[in-house]
Length: 314
Ligand code: CUA
Image (cartoon, rainbow, N blue to C red; front, side, top):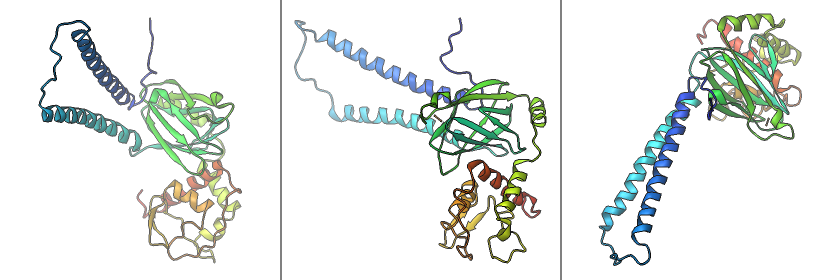
């Protein structure tokens, strides 16, 4: 009979996470065994009525103190180094990832692929590819949890978080919200469908909408009036956006920040927080005029401005 204690291992990091977990459990088990064995031994040896030497014991103080400090310290350092290694592996997105955007809201997951395809409570991905999710929340804190991939990330309003995985097996896997987010939290679930790359391409083209995410972003860029200031021929002096994504941006304060998704998001919603060096704080905030999905589309468009620039190799 099959009695799975753990969910299936379906991503490149699943095994490392499980090994760490089993390692910690084994270490705890050994410690508990040693402590209780010693306890039982002394309980038996010094039981009432037993003829036994009960005078003070002479153990070298220094030896025993050094032992009980150094041995647990070394053990803990092993656990620390091991855990840190797994943690960084899980946190750092490897290069060459395909990007998918996820917006959490009470009580559903809305997914949009760069090609424009949308889905709700489902996430289709090709097997073997590194997938980087950009996560946003429209209301409260959610958490995007993929047990079979051993990865989970909080989805926090007002900022982007990221999560990555590389699925190793074709199949259908659970997707949960792992942060209590209201009355229907338990219903905020879905499936990740890991497909053969060819099937994924078929799935993409079968449901392909008229415009990609970047094209939707481009339309918003014109409709919201961004193009009025942020294109080369504009009268108002605003920072040019070509190739800005991924670059270091010098600020008026002398600080230098990297123009990632979070920076672009803040520049749209809180434009006066970080003024690019050499520019005036003229831009109005778009807070309330644009929702999370539209923001991600705008950012997708601004990213392509970088790629279109022939001098930008990225
Ligand atoms: Cu969303 Cu719990």
